[in-house]
Length: 397
Image (cartoon, rainbow, N blue to C red; front, side, top):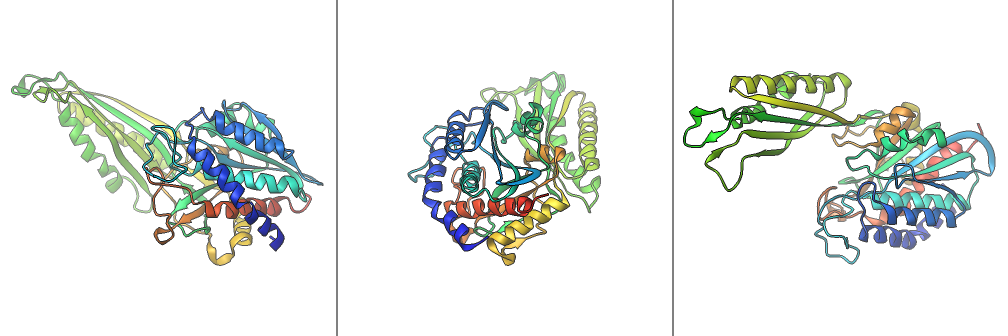
């Protein structure tokens, strides 16, 4: 990137910061991002970018064609939704909506892509077509999947798609990426153990589902230690355990629910987790004279970066911050992302941008009540997008 271009993006930092903090003050959760999409649509329209609204209820797609002829088409995606979480920050742009906050930086992701869109709309020296994809409902409800099902890539054909996410703990403005599996599959499982329940003073007169539930919680960790290869990675975590009534501790419950998440990278490991958890649930229930209702819901697939597009993303990141600040082989993360659905349909790459380490004030992790996106990386992220466009569409195909 030439110095003038970089400076023009840095000059936009006050404008971008104002947009990001405005979105942060007004968080909107999955499929309810009406105010946010109004902002996105208004900005894109004012910069002369064609827009389409309505995919996955609140999705926005902006289309921009280069001044030079070219047949290649690429998609750049940013997520827009917030989380159901009570913010504990006390700065001026904290959430004004009780119980909701931008605790994952989607406000920053949206703003970085807007910054790139504004710059590229004024500097269309590229060959081909850009689709700016502003996606709702990344946090758990699969907005990417819904956009695809409603015709995203039919209406806006893409030869490749790209995404970006901030990463607390990675130094400010540095980048990290890898070829192949980078984020895990995310699945939700539920086991409801059922017995007769009974009086706490006479447990022998009934069947107690808390016993197989307790055994199940411990036993499933043996799947990781004894069934999953030491050369593979998998995680099983209990996130919800419920049974009985607080006001009646002398009553043995008739049902105990155990619910949690599993993470994996390989289809075979994912299959193994689903099968073995069911086997253990049924065996432990039977051993205590109970039954179990077991359900395994496959939610987000693993996010897999394509080799060619990863190389292009690395090239763009190096052009943005220099080779020393780009990690091209980062260790995979066990977090999950619904951009994985887009990468199942189109080749592409997903990159992390540093939100700052502890010494830089970016130590609060995502999905925590003290998290905040670091506004100083807004121009860096926008610059990455511009460099990516040049790497992909700089020459006519």
